[in-house]
Length: 206
Image (cartoon, rainbow, N blue to C red):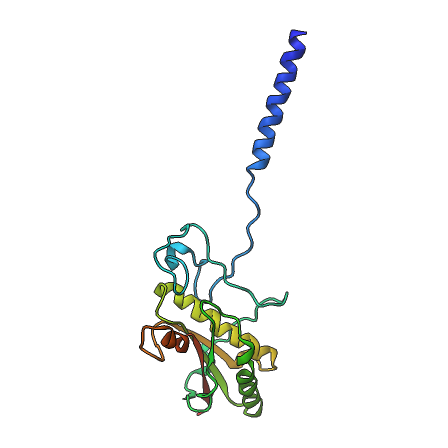
């Protein structure tokens, strides 16, 4: 009887250990999207504390900041080789009224801004010898590294929209200036709203 009791206790101990091990298994982590030109995922340790506009709250520095993929199940279109625009002439006037603006800490295209992108696509379809550069910008809040990443996400969102509108990916180039080139130097919401933007530069052949 005593031996049976010992065996039962051993079985219970084994079951308890197994349950703890199983319970502590880490859940599989979602894949990270890499930023073009960066050899490793951007983490909070690199990007600083929080997001555009948040300061003073330190996040877990080991958690990678997720960069949203396109909204379809398709693989993101590879970036075009920047050597293809070598020597082309930048024209900032054609699309100066087509600047699109973003919500705070967002890179998704507003419904109200889509008509501007549609107009850009129409011009590009009629001028097949041209290319375009999309510049992503942020307001001054947040860290420089985070804003550079957010600016790239904004530029890539517009690029994806143009590709889906029928523009060849080899004609579209992106660059992020983060907070470095504000449209308005002010330090209030009115200025910040103008700085959360994409600008479009038409590239003309020689």
